[in-house]
Amino acid sequence: MNFISQGLIEAVNLIISGNSEALSAIRNTIEVTTVSIITASALGLPAGFMLGYFDFPGKKFIRTLFDTLLAMPTVVVGLIVYAFITERGPLGGMEMLFEKSGIILGQVALILPIIISLTASAIETLDPRLHSTLLSLGAHGRRIIITGIVEARFAILAGLVTAYGRVLSEVGVSMMVGGNIKWHTRTITTAIALETGKGEFALGMALGIVLLAIGLSVNIALLTLKRKA
Amino acid sequence: MKKILLVLLSFLVFSCGKISDNKNTLMMATTTSTDNTGLLDYLAPRLKKDTGMDLKWTAVGTGKALAMGRNCDVDILMVHAPAAEKEFVEKGFGVKRTEIMYNDFVIIGPANDPAGISGKSINIALNTIKKKKIIFASRGDNSGTHKKEKTLWKASKIQAPEKEKWYIQTGQGMLNTINIAAEKKGYTLTDRGTYIKYESTMKGNPPLKIIVEGDKNLINQYSTIIINKDKCGKTKTELAEKFNTWITSENIQKYIGDFKLLNKKLFTPNAAIQKK
Image (cartoon, rainbow over all chains, first blue to last red; front, side):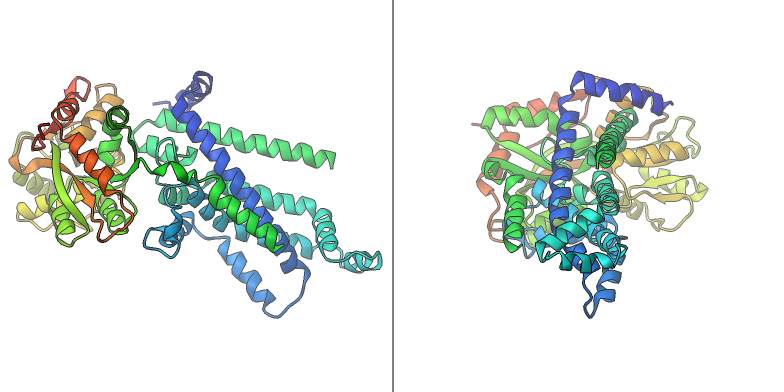
């Protein structure tokens, strides 16, 4: 059976016909991954900067810790987040299980180490004279962070692209924490898992193609940004 | 910095959860068969029309559904493992187990029936598969179907296989397991509803056919269980009760019986009908 060509045809059909179930999964995916990457960047960029810029006792240990977390399987993150937000867990009262907010929490936990670790590496490779130059120019505090990040922007961007790829492709967190609920928390990846499980390989393949298309457009957008910068 | 963090966190929690519309939403954990066959997709719009209630469900194996019930993550269960269900209610996690419908389990296998068990009783069929070491795909995921399979091995008075080479524990849902059995040209145990769905996906000409059916040990009973409010304070008992009254009503029981794929009935309703 030629699922691949069937998948391609189905993918085009899916988008043209505006299949509402598929559109809802696509919308959920874009919504969740966007909020996740923004939140994780907002937390991870400054943290990564500090980790790469300042020297303090235990720094090596923390770096190793974050580097290890890079290899965290998504199902494990899903399981840990589930344990926290299940009704019986410490955050049970916040009603995040089976909601998009739960998926976002899991995805942020998943990619925060990537952003922190890669940002720290990017900052570490900056010219060490930058700091003294900035100081002599009278910069301090927030100004130093921003200039540092701007100087290392390409390496940092590469980290963000990696992180976005990871949230876009993960299925463990979305399945475990989101529950794959139709119209509500079904994302492209959980829909693919479901359709494949149902034996609808062509539809699964079609959704996979849509997912790749999203990844591609994000990367093209970033590439254009890079050229202009 | 802290301010930004706080703003972001609150954004994270509030902006995207749409938590407020949950009052009239019943959260159900159910088995893969009710979802894969499309039964719940068929019932949910009718439920909304009749009662105004939204049904949200997560389709997992019965084992995991019961665990979600114990953790108070859902309001109601729709599952098919009577022994485990009764234990669940006895231990006080659930109240009111209500039988709503049944179908039956069948053994499916390649059309040429390599084990030669067509039309045999389930006991003889399993014995023969084991003796001849023919590939058998098991769910292996503690789901209702897996639990049933284990009881069937036990009832056949043979040691259930575990590590044998011909015995494949897939750890996946029913349709996945059927697909694996088909690829490996082996047998598997499935509920009839999922098999009909598989037939219909394969456009009526699947590589695996029903080989053993009709044994009285093969009945597959589906029930709902309402989560106990004493254990889970936040559970929406009233909504769950309303759902139960609805699904056991004469009209809806008939509506379940009318659910067909390839012109075949998937589930037979058998609730003690509640007259108005």
